[in-house]
Image 1 (spheres, rainbow, N blue to C red):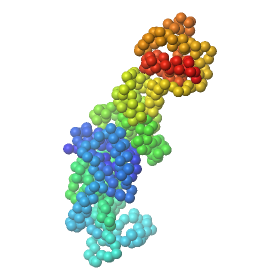
Image 2 (image 1 turned 90 degrees about the vertical axis):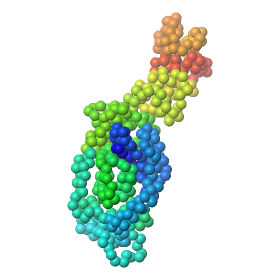
Image 3 (image 1 turned 45 degrees about the vertical axis):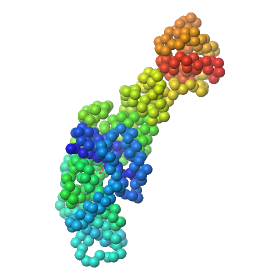
Image 4 (image 1 turned 180 degrees about the vertical axis):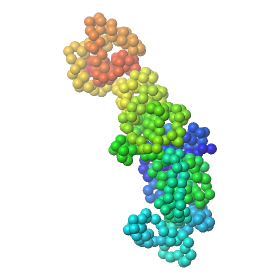
Length: 462
Ligand code: GLU
């Protein structure tokens, strides 16, 4: 079975680069009827926090990507890692190293002075003497000393490293027994049955080390896909200034998770010039072997455009559900379908949709000064009041066309034009001169509230 995973380190929030590889991993697993697993890489007890892990899980939930099985926390697995450290020690594939930090500094200084890469020199690899008793040893794994290490990456093709450029006998367990990153990643990927690893290409140089671990422990090496970074429009590393980095900032900015995922799939992968992909299409079309070899540029306008496309086209029930996240519950509002349909084409994000909805469903407490000045001149309030009396005489009506008919008859009888009535009505109903089609708005607000709001403006004034 094809198994992928997303393995964030809880050092901060869930960032969009991480979410993109999570999406790719999710799609690839689901497309192949496989499993997509979530592993929280929290072995670095100094840099990781429980709060960050919770924040990542929450952000992940918000995206709607679901993982299989329960979440694996590396911090619960120290016993497993210890067992493998011991196994390698017993098999002579790893050894204790008693080099002091002063000795390490001295070694590295010398190497730097010779313009060499800083690396461990293997001094305790075959040590047989009496170890110093004032040093708690770390455990190092025996890496190949020469030759090449290579693998075929699904994105980059054949990747070759000269062992002497990338490897040394690296530490797999610290002096206090805690295991190190490259060691546990390989163990967990193997034990969790991960067959394909899709991750950022900032991890490319870790791969040879992880391959050493796989080989030492006799595990199968998964297939790797190293995805190029997301850059800013000027080709530099993406920073907070270029766009939100924390996935939850997108939510705050009114971006729909569907739109964010759609945006992310296109950052690094394409299908002709298609821009909008439903989840079904993503599942159908995505293949990590087609991921672009070069880095992709973040484009905030594109995201905003995709977001508007989703606001225009998503099912109303879904938008109603999302609006709950923005503290707006429309589930009991009878005309929610008409309301959303009336506004969705104009909203550029969910915050705007929410405020447009509120401007209609909440009776205004004050009125836009400029609109009042411009449209409530002369006998405008008197006309509005008379129209309201016409409405009351007509009795409860519901349809936009019915409101329109009353208005037309009223205007005709007084020899007036729609412009004499439309803006004053808008001011009474939504507090400003800006709203979608006025009769649609009246129909959604409902007869009783329409009459009440107009009365309020006419009788109480501005
Ligand atoms: N924990 C690593 C990170 O957050 C990812 C490790 C991996 O995908 O292999 O960057």
